[in-house]
Length: 261
Ligand SMILES: Nc1ncnc2c1ncn2[C@@H]1O[C@H](COP(=O)(O)OP(=O)(O)OP(=O)(O)O)[C@@H](O)[C@H]1O
Ligand SMILES: [Mg+2]
Image (cartoon, rainbow, N blue to C red; front, side, top):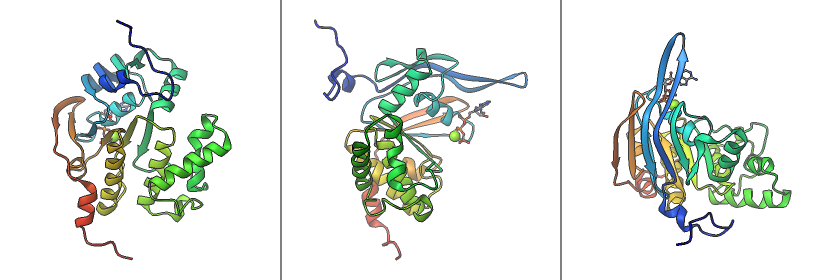
């Protein structure tokens, strides 16, 4: 049999659909602090398949962000192994980590992390600027993503001229602009009211239906209810990992009273 090898750019890779997108084996992160050891993550083993929508829950300090930073190739484990789309991340150097991040992952944060004196359009173009994409293509790709998140009419607005939910949608457009397979979102609805949270979840569900894998951290069971798998952390360990019959966020939104204004 022919050995399985990565496909040419731009072609679908059968191998990548059959193997886990995220695969962790005995992943651990320890910090030495004041003579003691903090076990932020203990011997974590789990896989996430392409197309899953995973919610990560657990009390403060249970290791959720540590897990997201490792999965996002922002940090290296103290021990254990991690493969992203089959590539062994734990043996990569800083340049290789940056490259795999740019190629495969989009990040969404609780506080949006948009540049304040910069338009929505330019905020979304930024990752493409770093990637050296020519100006006209940057413009077209950012525009398409902003239209996709429903902000085609707000291209020239600065973050302060947008609502919280609109700012988070700009951040999601920015996360999408590199065409990632994986979106990692650490409490993306933590700064939003409940209606706006459901709007953001409806957008993430729509992206998931297009095939993007989503892993999000949330403290709220109401938000986790939109995911199809819920993983609970405690003291750096997974204490529960179960399938969930997800609520449909678009339907939940339609059932709410119309927004004022
Ligand atoms: N750089 C660091 N140095 C030392 N300890 C750290 C460091 N980063 C995290 N920790 C510790 O690791 C543990 C896990 O932290 P982590 O940020 O992953 O928790 P979390 O589940 O995301 O919490 P929260 O819900 O409050 O965001 C905590 O006990 C934390 O104090
Ligand atoms: Mg955290």
